[in-house]
Length: 265
Image (cartoon, rainbow, N blue to C red; front, side, top):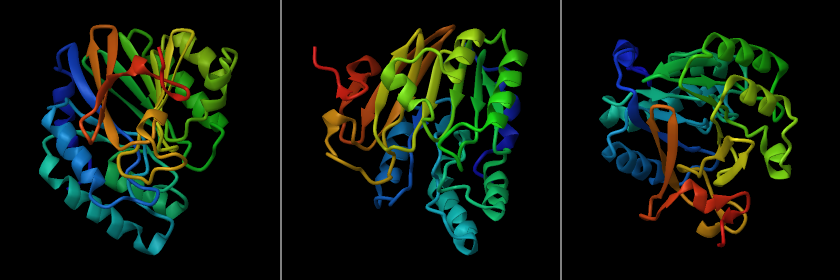
């Protein structure tokens, strides 16, 4: 069994325009025992159309043990095989030629790829080995977005939030933001930092997802965006809304969060 059930792909073409899916943050980066299992159970109970990760599915780092790690993940995911799963390559997933081959084997996709669901288009990028988005990824992304200009909703996903400094500074002149505006991208999603960070910039939503099992850093406080959880994303026609869930049961809208944690009103 592969992490992505390709046999379900044909069902996507007939999907309704209104749907919701779940965005999962990093599972690893000093994985915390049992947390990912809780995140999976809670998010699956929400009956999403699919699960989308932002990368770091295995701990990785060693070619010799990487395949066994992928097999361990398959066993964790087995109870949820009915839910399609899309993986993004993270730095813990891909670090060498061997690990790259294993990622494509177990994800069922190349390092960058795109897919459609219910009139929405999702472009998954590979910046697993660079904090800066590689030029080749920009070129691929532009071609992909150009080919899907008519999609009602467009989202761009990568592991590392290469946009983080630009979003923090409100920079609307970055190459990624200009491309997002040109092609009508609504949302740019990432992970890697294990912290929920949210910024709205010129009509584009930027989100670094909270951890789904990787260790918490710095203050480790919920109000600072350091918590274990998952994000429900609703798509209704061309409208997109977010609902952030912690494993402890706290639920907030994305508007409650800013660049530095919970927004004080």
